Image (cartoon, rainbow, N blue to C red; front, side, top):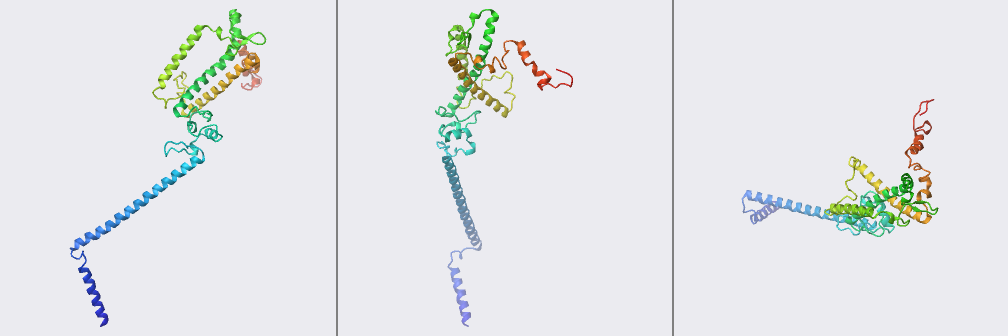
Length: 329
């Protein structure tokens, strides 16, 4: 009896709670809507919480990644003066020679040479002249001009000392030679600032040279004026044999590297020529005959003698030409 009384009391209490519930006075379909709303509201809140969690995680990952990049840049002493947060250069993107030069203290940390892909970039700028990208292009343009002139000068210097005596002897006027006397008294040294003899060059020749140079320089300045940050240094469009035009990307880069390397060597060589002749008071072709008068150019003044000198290359004994047994070439 006591158990039955407790059961009836519990049922009455439950019915009273439902009777006083705000939802109890609504129709059945309204109950369903509220239940759905509660479910959707819970789902939305859950999605919002998940989105906030993901955004927070992504932000933390970005901050951590950026922190690692900046820390690596500082550790390697590169990208210290980076202008944008995402412009930090990684170790692989930095030129090896430039990075080495910076680490030993002969290249500034903000130099554009660190990330330049120019052929022949060895990171050599101890005075920091190329402090910006546009200045780097201008200095490479100037370097190529001097390199090309030096290559022509290195050939012309030795050729003048080899050929000029033969030419004046051919016309029968030795006194017309522009060569300067050496220690032996013979006319053998090419005219130069240190050797003298530049006053023997006719003023008209100097005037024509200055005019031609001025025209080329003005034309080039106007050509690059509108694109100071994107022009190709040294590109004058001179390729009559279409060697560069028909080359592939890797071949073009190889040609550019060869040009700058040979040009740098020629600039050193022409300086050595001038210094040697001034100090030794003797022509460079006589100072180093193994390269000139007693070497590959020994018979440069005579086509017949040159052919005779090198005709041995086509003999059986040279090993270059294939000959059948018992027959010569």
